[in-house]
Length: 262
Image (cartoon, rainbow, N blue to C red; front, side):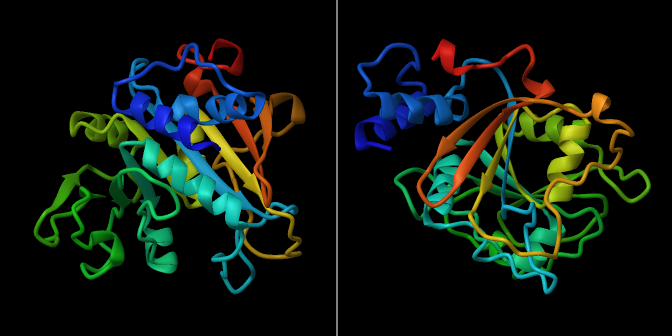
């Protein structure tokens, strides 16, 4: 990632530039191919997902240690994704266990809005995700519960204890957040995939074997046969310490931005 490509992507994010054209080196063009879809704002609302995992598909050890699963380049990649979207979504389990800040610290760019899905009000009001630092903070819940001053509350009806992905997305779009990143956990990402709402999924694989522990993507309704399995169009990008697989999913069928079109 060169400085001039990153400045160009930030300009595209702010509606001050276009992805087409550009006198890029082959390496710079690869960066545009990888990050361009996140920066683009002229194709309507879009939802992206990102998950970091080991070579054997784990996102945490058996003791739930997930902090060092990604290498330094994988972490920088995640922060670039945050900087290019309007908001980052995590489920309450991730917010409780990982205590994420969801800020941009490893690259230049704005902090996204922080959004937590917390149907039953499990997340305490002193959680880092609610800390006032100038970024928007939102919680999606299914009950009336007071939240810290400045936190925007979206209340939706839960069905069997869960919130509907379509309703959550519609409410966030209405709040002005149209380009969204689901950062965790694997179950939350899986629900948006199953609902057909995820445009692209970045799977960042680090060269580590864990051997046991929590699996990454676990679909709520997995297929019975491989013939029925989802087979996204996929491009691999080497980041140095990690390899990212950029997967184009059914949620992007009509708005796909492929490397050939950038």
